[in-house]
Length: 309
Image (tube, rainbow, N blue to C red; front, side, top):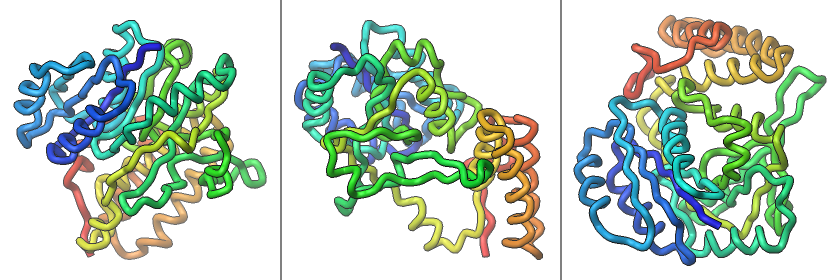
């Protein structure tokens, strides 16, 4: 069994260095490590050029993109590159996701102990930096009254099992069977960030089961919520993609749910921000673009844009 791992990075060189050191310590080892550099401006490209020249037990591949295409664009081109190599499984993770040294041992044990013919993807558990499980990375999707989506996070009882089935995953610690990716396709690169993994989950799930194996572990060093609170930000560029992409995904996969979600976001726009015209404009633009399928990176709502109190 051969495995390629893909890491997408953008302007987080110190975290990337820590992540790479974790991959170096993985027992059993991977065969290819592909780094997709999303046009970083913090010295990442120079570092990766030097890193790629150092000999290791795995093959190193660096993909330098000419623009920041977000997580979805990065994972798309990373997977496209990985499919050029003779591998059986492809692992996806962010540059702030640190794999446990026993990750591949646990993964191989799961494969050897179970019939995986009907399995399309195998997910790790995801821990926060305080060593608590982040249940929101693995979810079940249900529809209340057939129209209201419920994204139900995994719970502690799930993690007491050897493995459990899910509907939705984040891209933190997901192993894709190569034949599944060839059949279901790669993620949609123009989503930029958010719900690219959800949309991909819905397609992947049609080709086979998706499971989470708790003994496979990643630590995710994600502090955006804390930063947002500390800086007094009401909305940011992230909210645009969150609203737009969720509407787009539901309209694509379950139109009645998408229509309900679109109407609810319209109402929420004026309930949350009755007097803030800038927030209303962001909300309404995101809704309009989600309905029309106008994807890609928005010229205004791009990384760095914020609306403060």
